[in-house]
Amino acid sequence: MELRQLRYFIAVAEELHFGRAAAKLNMTQPPLSQQIQLLENNLGVMLFQRTKRRVELTGAGQSFLVQARAILASAESVIGMVQRVHRGETGRLAVGWKPWADLTALPPMIRAFCERYPDVQLEILNLTVDEQVSALLSGTIDVGFVVRPHDSGSHRLHNSELTSQFICRQALAVVVPKDHKLASRRRILLAQLSGEPYILFRRDSSPVFYDYLISLYQRSGVALNVRHEADHPSTVLGLVAAGLGITILPYSAYTTGSDVVFCPLPEKHGSLEILLVWRTKHPSALLKRFIDTITKYRRPSGAFRVR
Image 1 (spheres, helix red, strand yellow):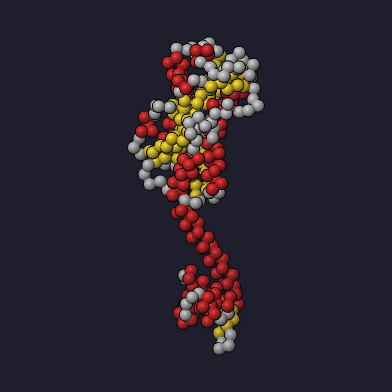
Image 2: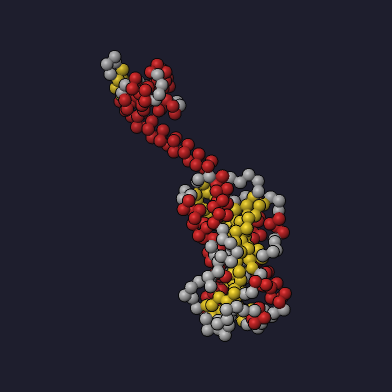
């Protein structure tokens, strides 16, 4: 039994006239009658009672019409779904995420993609840079957002199997309690932080940022006085708001109405870049649409500044 035979049968069942059904199907009547006879022979039942004056559905034909419509609708749905997958309009993407991604412009980028392709399922996984690279190479994730210091690079991102695209640059800011002596400064020098109790973002949550921060202090000859450590930016901000110390975070973590103040660091202290990374070989149509949406949405350097 072929799908076209089901279409032929449904047309005849709806018209109850072979001539009109043939015209509806843009074919002649003899091959239509032949296909209906083949269908009846394959099923071993008569679907139509035929006389010279009229065509009627048999009891078996009436029952088969219900099933034929359901089968044809299901088949067309599957065909449509497969075609949409081929065009990259539906499917599933596993996306590597960075620990403070929810405090950046990345969520609006993801929202823009989801609004454009509402039938795509995204699986968001919080992974460090090294974990994302390993997951990309093994095929566990399809694409990742990774962070690295500006004008430097992770050697693992130079793997020929991976392609990366710059998305945005994040300036750094010193975060202090609103009643801190430095809260009124529009810009802070790193030397002014020497000896200040510091809330450190844990290395296992973001090794790249952790190592960059330690290196920043060491290169500047400033003593880092670590009092507490936390594994998420919101926790770090909460400890700073409680007056337990200061910290350095990307300026994109700034939130209004909080009990902390963000003071920009001079450009000489560097910044962080966010890259989109994926496997170079044979990206799917869906992945291409994701890359295209994100890269078109990306912000210029400094676009996260809110002051």
